[in-house]
Length: 79
Image 1 (cartoon, rainbow, N blue to C red):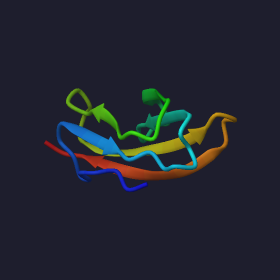
Image 2: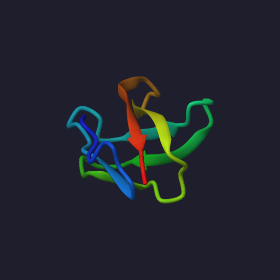
Image 3: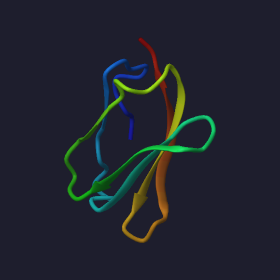
């Protein structure tokens, strides 16, 4: 999964891999606080608004229905 655009200012899009059509997308800030948590229910792209986030680096995890991490990475929020 390669979220785009990265860096982002308003929203970021996560293409869902075919092997994880159900699960969760969790995004945390540098302090480990969850800033977004969304259910994944299909292989469509998940879009997350970043407009209210402060500038900085965030970390994401895509988990399958069993809670196992399928993929992870980071993204950067800029104005």
